[in-house]
Amino acid sequence: MSYEEYLSYFQESLLRQFGDHLAVVLLSTLLGSIVGVSAGILVRHQPGPREIVLKVAGTMLTIPSLALYAVLIGILGLGWPPVLLALTAYSLLPIIQNTIVGLNSVSTSVLEAARGIGMGDKARLLRVELPLAWPVILVGIRTAAIILVSTAALGAVVRGPGLGNAIYAGLNSIGSSVALYQVLTGIGGVVVVGLLLNAIFFALARLTIPSGIRD
Amino acid sequence: MTETLIRLEQLSKTYPGHSVPAVESLDLSIPDGEIVMFIGPSGCGKTTTMKMINRLIEPSSGRIVIAGEDVTSIDPNELRRRVGYVIQQVGLFPHVRVSGNVGAVLRLLKWPSDKIARRVDEMLDLVGLDPSQYRDSYPKQLSGGQQQRVGVARALAADPPVMLMDEPFGSVDPITREHLQDEFLRLQQEIRKTIVFVTHDITEALRMGDRIAILGERSRVEQYDTPPNVVARPSSDFVANFIGTNAGLRALTLMPIDRQTLVPPPAEREGPRLVYDEDRPVGWHLSDGQATTRIQPLRLSAQPVLADALNQIVSSQAPSAVVVDDDGQLLGCVDMSAVRAAVAGAAGNGDRSDLQMEAASGDGSA
Image (tube, rainbow over all chains, first blue to last red; front, side, top):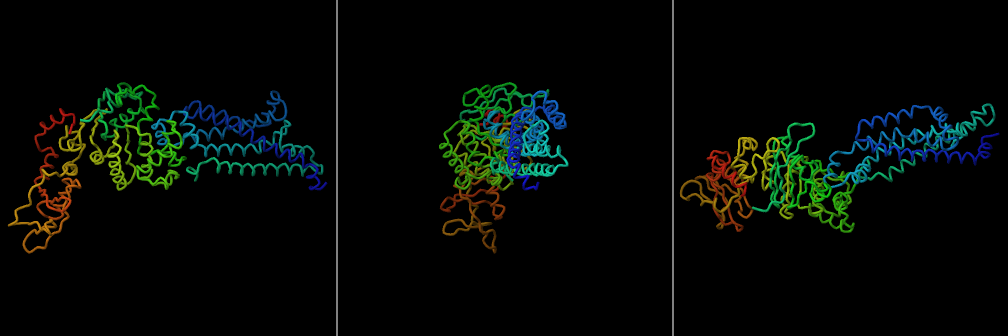
């Protein structure tokens, strides 16, 4: 079987795996952003809870995903759910960290002016602190997404979505004529997902960062 | 004396963990429409005192009354929207255009957007920035001086009766600072706000203030008076030290020349002689055989001060400075005796105990 034959034969499932891979990364990054940014906002001024939250998020990153999946299968079964949960957990550290750094680096004179003209806590957070911290937060979210692109490939061990399935299938059939095709296509696809994500985040930065604070 | 707009009553602030209060039992009345300068050594509590007026710092005890209303326990955000606030670092919102910065308070007050847009343009005009050129700029595109103008426009947008200014011109270069000061004084002629202005620069205090509150430790009011009175009659050594050794020269810049100051030109027969051109004084003939020294007479309508007279005397080497009317006709001269008298008063060579009592009993009315 030639590579062209392999591609045309598996085209449909490869495209689906590519789409799933992108989707699972984006979805878990989104969930991680909601959880991580909220957590960062809550703990930014309290050194105690801040350390605890960062430690917990850091520890999650050190758990090998195979071990994590072994535990999660028992709770969530196979397929998307354990992968989504694991990836969300892995995304938290860079997002929380950058949220805290971004918010705490907003200039004190800007905050004082905001207080001085009568902005309440909520208005100040939404209209001043978050917009000014946004470029830093966005970098954290992008870092998380890029980490997840490769981590997501391992989701195939719990029958999760994505290009890990192609790689996994190749590894399981080493010696067969398509094994190398499968592994290389899977890896190539993961790289393309990564490039695509970079482009998405570049566009997102252009669209969401006001030109007054873009450098 | 004008009516009091802001009254601080027994105002105290003790920071948590400190045994000594930063501000202790301060009583102060700030008249409507005046600029009151808070000045004092660093750490004296002048900024703390100012920030208690809009409750960026909550007082530990005492009352703040603005226009008859006790604002000590109302919603602080409500209060702050009624009190303009300008700080040294300006604190413009860098992610928002000039229009958004100037309109920030108006948005909080929920003005309709077309009204905000009109008001923003009005404010930019008021502070000398062309709206069509600047309303869509971001703060980083402006110079330091322009940024502070936007800061002032933001503080004035909701037309608050009271403005608090915390060393607003402290971070620009001296030339821009002087320019902004002049411009602000002109603006104040129009808007007549009641302004509390914190500074550590005595020159700025004397120049800008209708009244100066010289604060000692724990914001104790050492003297509260008009600039000429503070210079001429410092109430204590603390104040005298604070004003500095060149108080005499400073006094000259504060003392206007009026018709009472003027004396006739020196007798014509001997010594220096005033030279006229078509009845208008143009110079001095200082001694026989010397050419005429040309001068630029002071116009009384331009509100000259004694320092201007001294400057003319020194640069022309004539015995006195010449003051004319708008037509250039001689009104009279200012001689060194007037200058000396002013300096002597300022240096405290006169009978000070007498003056002190006068300053204390008058509560600084001038």
